[in-house]
Amino acid sequence: MTATRTAGTEVVVEADGGSRGNPGPAGYGAVVLDPVTGETLAEAAEYIGVATNNVAEYKGLVAGLKAARELFPDAVVHVRMDSKLVVEQMSGRWKIKHPDMKPLAAEAARVFPAGRVRYEWIPREQNKHADRLANEAMDAGKRGVRWEPSTSSAALTAADARAARNAATPPPSGPPGDATAGAARARAALAGTGAGGGTGVGAGTGPADGTGVGAGTGAGSVERTGRVAGDAAGQPDDALFAADEALATQARASLASAAMAERRTAAGAAASSGDFEAEAGILAHPGHTRTPAGAGPVVTAPAPGEAEAGATTPAPAPTRAGAPGWGAPDLGAPATFVLLRHGETALTPEKRFSGSGGSDPELSGAGLRQADAVAAALAARGTIQEIVSSPLKRCRQTAETVAARLGLDVRIEDGLRETDFGAWEGLTFAEVRERYPEDLDAWLASPKAAPTGGGESFATVSRRVSATRDRLTAVSAGRTVLLVTHVTPIKTLVRLALGAPPESLFRMELSAASLSAVAYYADGNASVRLLNDTSHLR
Image 1: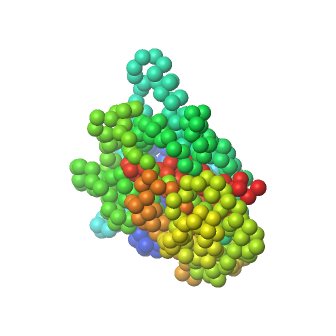
Image 2: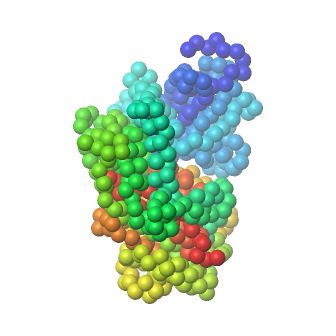
Image 3: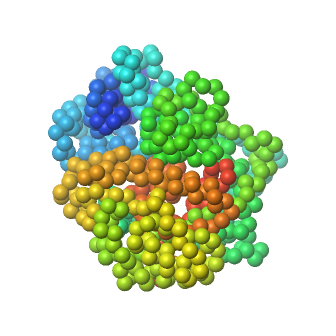
């Protein structure tokens, strides 16, 4: 494309940066795109030596803006990045305090007049072109050479991803009306698995023991409204533990092969960048596979944390022999985890960070009443077969209250403990903002950033929780297990089941003594059936 557009024409700049170590060997990537056709107009990437993720992201932004200016000096620029920190700071909503980022932000602001640039945050999976460029630059730096546009495959990789998505849904076949009927059956079956019908999402970040802090959006809790598909035929009205899974299983299998192809494409890119999803165990979940760089056949993914760099070739969608479409094999009854957040402690209503590195508070009077209420509700359902609890006191008290009502024992699982919030333990969000503003900004911007004083990052917690999930699902097929745990582990299990990005942790409400549920199937797929049900507390 030639620079023959009229003044004021819009272009899109996507930019990213990364650091293998944070700080560590770092690089950035940026691409200028036609907003209508998606055509790549320019690419930029560079290895910048040892730097932090945020510095690399800012350098990618500057490079992308300069590339756009070289093409169209009078352009209107739409910047899209997956760095919330950069987007919020350049939009003027967050202050820039870090000395390494101030000059870079000032340089970015000088490239175009402020009125001609707008910023938008996008999920990581929508920023793969720039992410791939950044990783190419870091790979080149590791070899001691400069990144060259002629060797880049980032644009091709992005085009392949779009093509895979477009090919994932084949055109309807068969007699007229079959496609419509099939879609209706799928919708009805999947609705029957008991997904909550509420539309609200929480305003709290949720990692603190209390909810409602930080940058989450939306309001309200998601309440269960779904009914079991077989309800009219006498099945229990219980979205947590539907007995008749046949139709729902067929619907999932019919949709799974298309979804799996897109997940594999994303997983391959994640492995090449060492990104959070690979670290969290998405690749290692049973049924998920990937293709390492230079390899032909699809191979089983390694354990969490063992993903190899350079795995960028998307694997083909799996073929279920002899079972296309509605003829999929029965995957058997799932392992169903009912996720119970513990009752209130004295810290909960004050919305203070309360993790595994603090005072280990016990349930308050309100929390004990909540535990009694949820125990009565679960006893009325009569379907819990096993109880597993975090080792922290507030969870053990909640679990023991339920166990006494159900006549079950409680097994302790260390992997279900809450995040260690380091020096933030016992503080409110406002107090952390006042005392440790830069650390908090970094924590909100990256799942790999840990709280002040040696706490756990969300990436670390996710590895721990996903490993615990895999151990429990391996021995729980066909069983309904109550996991009594905390905000972050529950949100992490839901996030991983949905394949949602790390920032989704900040967009879920999770009340004290609330119930959520996820079912795990033999093919590695998961179904979120319930989120933040508090009806038993009313």
